[in-house]
Image 1 (cartoon, rainbow, N blue to C red):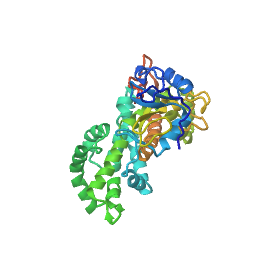
Image 2: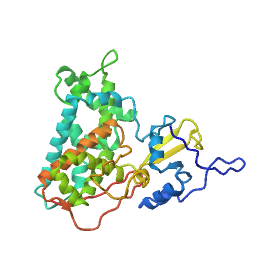
Image 3: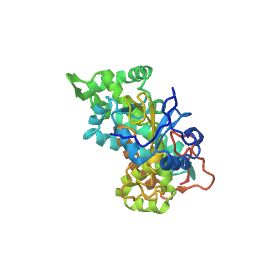
Image 4: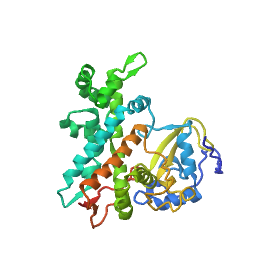
Length: 366
């Protein structure tokens, strides 16, 4: 478990224990990397009062914190809810093959739409839609509902009570048909799955579908955009991957290390952890930890062939599976349909969100 005892905390009568610290995370939205270096070097554990959280920035500390049972997820941040375990089991065997086929098919459809164009924005026209199109195809949902499902994926529908009711009402007739006439899609697999005492209830199936739609949301799209941007910025590495697609998983892991889609994961302390009091919020800075020079050689450099990229996390297990499939088959589809794919000249828009960071646009010549 995490051991955070290295900070000597100044105390004054009646005041909580809070060490002096560097400028707040709130001052580093546009370019957080200089602050990350300062934190790792001089303030590996510090309370950021404007941000309202204790900051962890070194790779070893962040990795330990994410595994520490005393630090639990904060609402709205990556967690491992009970619903994800049966979904994780469902996404094996034939169901995983169906999901893989859905990713591959959806990626090729989207890529071919760009083939006749002179230029395109891969964020708006490919990355934002591929995870949703995959979920629709894998679950066997009506194609004409893709735009509606897309809005749900982006909003995380299924996590709130209101969202679950709306999703449940949408799925009810589809679930009834799958129970009566199962097919080879993932919704049929979930309807046929069994839990303690019998088949899964409609509410449970709705929760599992909501989890999958959450995995098809903004985080996966952002991660894919950063991955493609890294490769387009390194055309020689991209050329190697074109010839050696077996190296794509390592290139994907390296992108998650260098440019995770979510730089900050929040945890709440159930009990004191070193100098961190019970009830406090802890910010695990994935963006800082992934570029820790004590863990990675030349950490700011993107190297698709790094032998041990070791990304800390990409959400939960369904997130990780869907995102990895999206990266692999999305890249293959683009390289197949757009053999001349390259960055378009012109100014690039920098991310303007500290927590979720990825290219806002990715203009390319096709």
